[in-house]
Length: 514
Picture 1 (cartoon, one colour):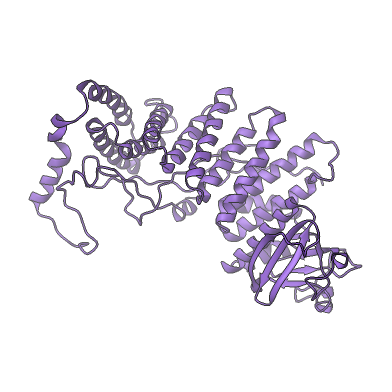
Picture 2 (tube, one colour):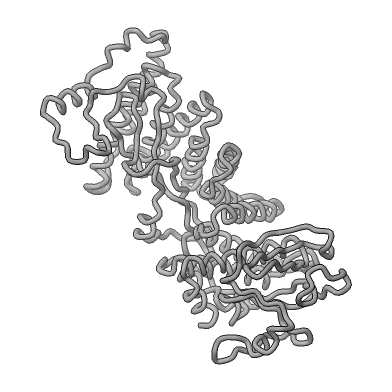
């Protein structure tokens, strides 16, 4: 296959935290006024199918996928503020002027109980000086437009509250964490062409707060996750330098810690994969392939947690594309254990096609699909070999199992009749002619009938990587040539089924039948 043309585009990251302070207490939380869930930000890392370039994600896509978040304070209930709050049933309540003024006075006046703080004056003075330096950075930020300026005023107000909380209790790790978020969001609010304050200085200060918070609470997985994103943002400012390499390594360690503390986070796994992908572009060539394969495993793990996580699906496609290009560029023979560049290109196209089917209006996916569509085994999504038992005899002796070609499209997984391992022609109805005539003598699994797809290991199966497809008509057992090959079949079947469940099979059909 000739080397494909380059295409500049941006990899799609995970969701981003919104920071909007509530009027609760001087050390109260920053909160998004949306349903509560874990706080996340997004790593804006880029990947490529060709040379890298800056490009913006689709705003509509960004808004639609914003992660709803809340952050807490361990003093929120200890010092309740008299500032009026709305309960769920008070949406139309009108507050009196006295109530509003009392709330404003409480938020703006120094705390009376500071005099009774259990911490020494020296320690309080040290924290006050650190806080003042951080506040100077935040106060210097000016948004790029009216919305940005309004948002920055809110962030500045929130920062003052967290500074007061930390001066009163330097071990308030929630206040430290929330303040780090405010610093991080303020860094995002810095104009790209601005030199004062330095965006890097804001991110560095945020990293210090995350560090302090995690020292006080080593199980604060949200802090490790957002800290990794702040480090990644700093690394991107330094290009492909040794300093950037060290920062990317630090970011991957923090993502690893976040995943260890909260394994059920596809966003963290996706961002971990992106950080590894960035790192692979800097390290020496002898280390690159190992890092790339680790990135592949992180994207795949994210997809296994959330089958319709289109960002991770797309990013897996781009990293496979890059691996194919590297393999083709380095030349040399491909051993039996290695995947050929052509196969890597085909795998890449499957993931990019699936991402496009799930989000057909997303321009980044559409552009990438135009480049890789020809790498699919059209008019199918995937073609490959599996070892199968005789039809209707799932527990046949191992000698009766035969390796044969299988075809996967948007409707079915179909075994090619023995003796005909060429591409099966299509009838006008869209079904293969041979498949119509051979339904009774070949294995055929309709996507609509699938209940689950999983790897399996059983003594009744021939040696190899077992595949179990549970359907409403019973179970089908197949054996892939290798565990790496099995991963490709598992992902492809799960993605086609997910696309079917999401009602997007017609989009996938349009891609492969064109």
